[in-house]
Amino acid sequence: MIATPTFPDLSALVVDESLYIRRIVRDMLMRVGIKRVLEAPDGAEALGVLAESKPDLTIIDWDLAILSGEEFIRLARTPTTSPSPTVPIILMLGQPRRNVVDRAIALGVNEIIAKPFSPKTLWSRLDEVINRPRPFSQVKSLLRPLPRTNGLSKGLSLI
Image (cartoon, rainbow, N blue to C red; front, side, top):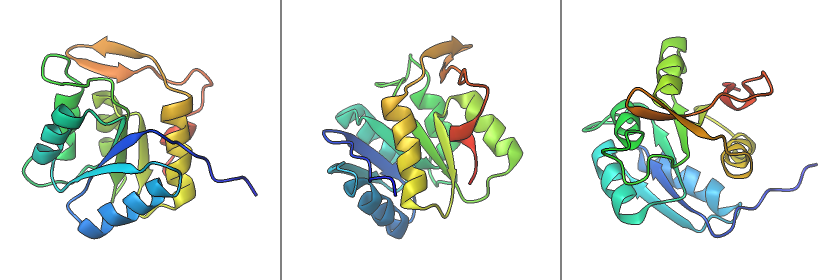
């Protein structure tokens, strides 16, 4: 059995309309040493938290009220509007349809996970964004992580 990874001294922003989901993700993060977990129920509040606290990573749902996950990602990845355009973004999808996955990648998410997911799945995505960060490139007005060079989209699998 592989040991549980640890990511001490990091802060995370968890964005989901469901308090229940936010608490589950918070628990998963705390189990790997991430003690500073900020929460937001919608994209608008998440943008405020991003600007004020500049977390080390963001875990956000696609389907949000007020400001959707898609709109949050677009604003977060636009250098002229974002306080932290290269913050790692892990996207949670309740219904991982191909067109949504393609749009999310085009907007610049780092990783995608399908709900419901296990702690191990979340931890593997954390490992990717923290221990194997990809450089960013600007495409039109958005910063996006460069594709993986190993030829596989392991981190973008929907398992």
